[in-house]
Image (cartoon, rainbow over all chains, first blue to last red; front, top):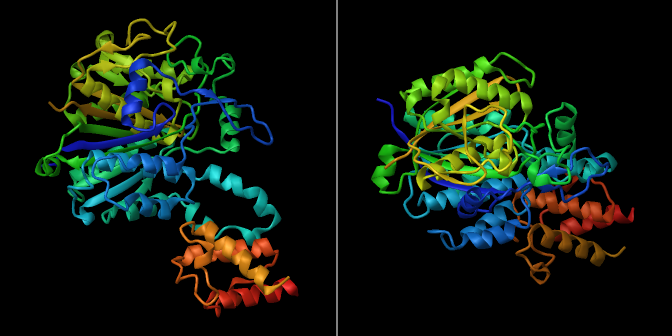
Length: 426
Length: 81
């Protein structure tokens, strides 16, 4: 008998809120985090719009954390000493993890450290950090900071966060391009199902891209933002006729997954159940989406979860605002759900947050759980003229909705398709 | 370049890497470890000081240094060379 797996805590820092409460408010009122990129690059690049995290330093975030429930005295000081010089993406992960750990009541109601795991979702997490050091390195390699040898590794996040939260079970990173977040959740779910850990911290790392990655995405034709360059908040338009590519977003998200048994024994609130998920490949190294792969991901996720398609009432789509991606996903949804598509709420969180790449799956799982528990579906703020009409797209305002079972999709370059099934817990 | 200048440079590197330390806590006879610097902090402080003084010393040459005085001496020697 496999362990059932629930979500017992979550935390997020994003362009639309520095914690779950702010994030929830933004989802409800349709507040976009997309704007003009504040820092200019030398040389200038072709990308000028993004959903960036602004106006919060790591220090001020940590000060704010002191209000979280159960934070032990001295914790924020310890964190500061451990991570004040860490790259921004690591600090973002620590921020989201601290909120999630607190919400899961793990500061005061702890688990055996060797029964807790940690998964960092994302690959190539230090691009911006590395790019920032390159100029000086070309002049005087001898003066490269020795911490580079630690920080350039993606697993720096595993080390740093396991030290801060005293985690001693399994820990690793998983990479799957834009599907990384969902893969992290799926692997954490499986660790618990297998009984290897009782709880697993799954962190969707911020993709802190350097100008080179931004330009690369632009050159490959994946980015939007041209037509609405003077109205950035309108640039990300999943499923709208005027969609033209994704808009880069920054966010760090964290879910605490826990066995139902452990969460019940600790007597804490369970936010949702992870009922199943799937990861399937297309056998394709390129960037194009594949309908058959997306269908397989959704179908296998539903069958793993032992859920009938008819019982799904909401899909948090991958929906990046890429013309080909949006069209392919709707086709795949239609094949899986058939005529039922007109009864399933559909929205795309990326319309607010931009495409958070590695953390997208975690951020969107969080958005899904919030909507399930609060009985609403968030608006599609830029959906003026849908590319298809036989789908139940959320409108431009929030709608009340009773969601019992939801699907959350994430697809990545390289033919990586994932889907997760989440269920509300009464 | 005086030894005192080298000491000042090292002090400024220490407080940058370890902001909880104030310069008046740093006496020349203590080691970086005594001030709470871990192995990576110590390397950071040394590299930062070398950069500020414009000297390049192979790190193996620093193996014998066991307090700030030793560090001042070797950096001073290279900076004056």
